[in-house]
Image (tube, one colour):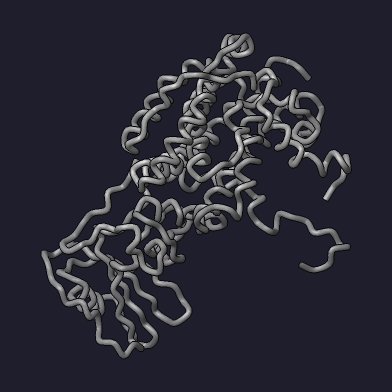
Length: 187
Length: 248
C-alpha cells in the first residue's frame, strides 16, 4: 500500500529535520477532469512522500472538481523555461541515460500548465531544448515545464472508483446547496 | 420501530454517525492543512452513509432521519464502543480509524450482496469510500509506526489503548443471525479473517505489534456505552433538543 519513490542518481533521502522551511516538500498536482483531454495543473500540496502527496491532492483539490485522473510531481523535479524570464533556460545541464520526460505548457499568462506530450531526453536542459520546437509556437508569456516521467505518481486507474467517485453525489459539499433565508441578507 | 431490519440498519448508521461526529470535532486541529481536509472528507463520507441508512429506516416507519439522529438517548444508540472513543492524539485518531476502516471495507463488500436492495446500494457505494479510507489510514499507520521514536511510541500506545474495543466488531448475536437467515445481513465473525490479515500486514510494515493484553470490552450493540458517548451526544444534540423541530 505504500508507494516507492524511484530514486535517480544523486537523489537524497528526505530526512526530517532537514526540510525546507521546517515543513514538508512541495508537490504539484495535475488533474484531468471528466470530459477533459489532458492533465491540467491544479495547485501545490505539501507532503512527505509521493503516496501522501497523491492522497493530499485528492482530498484538497478534488472535493468540488470532477476529476478522473490525478498526477503529482515533486516540485523539485520540475524544470522550467519561461520566455519572459531573464534566466538562461534550465541551468541544470546534467545528462544521464535517455529517459521519458513529460512536457507541460502554459501558453499565456493567467492560464494553467497543460500536459502537452512526452519526449525522450537525457536531462532537464535536453528536455527543454527538445520540447520547445515541438510544443511552443509563440514566445510571449509562455512557460514550459518538464519533469521525468519516473517521478510522476499517477493515480492507478484500477483505484479510480475509490479515489474519485465518492465526491460525485455529495451535493452538500457545494455552497449552492444551502438556501440562505431572506432575513440573513447577502453573504 | 423495532423490527429486526430497523435495528440492524441503526447499528451501522450509528457507527457512522458517531464516528463522523468524532472526526468533525477534529476539524481545524489536524497537524497539517491537507490532513484537516482529508479528515473533513472522511467525516462527510461517514455522515453520508449514516444519513442514507437513517433515511432508509425513517422511510420504512413514516418517521424522520433527523429525529433518529438527534432525539435518541445514548441507551438507544447501538454503535460500537470503538467509534465513540475520544480524539486523543493524532496516533489515536488514525488507529481508531484504521481498525474501523479495515472492518468497514469487509462489511460493505459483504453487504453489497444483501437481499435488501437499498442496503445493497448503500453498501456498494460505501465500500468504495471505505477502500479510500483504509488506504489513507493504513498509510498513516505505516508512516507513524516506521517514523520517529516518538511517533512509533505514540502509535503503539494507541494500539494498546484501543485494542480492547476490537473484538466487539466481530461479535454476533441473535439479530445478526436473523439477518443472515433473511439474506439481508452478514455474520460479523465472518469478517474477522480479512481484518486480521489487513491489520497484521500493516502493523508488520509499520514495525508495530498487536497489543499483548487481550482484555476486551463490549455492550455497544445493546446500548451499554462507555462514558464518552453521553458527552458526544450532548454536544451533537443540544441544539435540536433545545429548539425541537427548528428549521434552518
